[in-house]
Length: 121
Image (cartoon, rainbow, N blue to C red; front, top):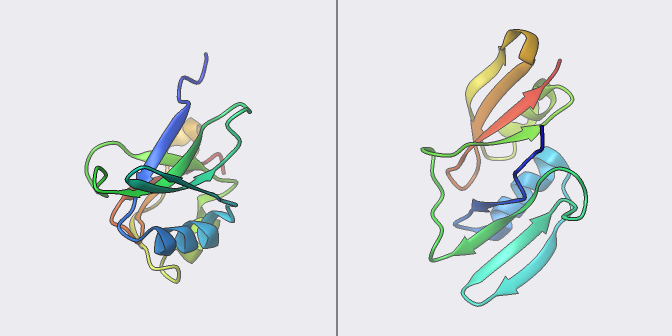
């Protein structure tokens, strides 16, 4: 099965605060991009398998806890969950066993987005 997701954008109110949060939780490296009416921090490798995306701050984007949820891959969701509160987020679904599909958790980031984690262990 092909992975059809190419790109995603995580909305921010304060892009620098969001960058700090995601750097602490996922150890991401960012590339700053300024577009007309928007600031972005891109992460991932757009030319490799899997999805890359960005943090975005613009008048056209609003963080939300409702709607689409993006899941980040993890070796063990407990690792990221241990850092969520200290980085300014909150856990809304603790590490949860989903049988043969592994484990998942969800948190609210510093901007008010609901984000998921998934691991096999």
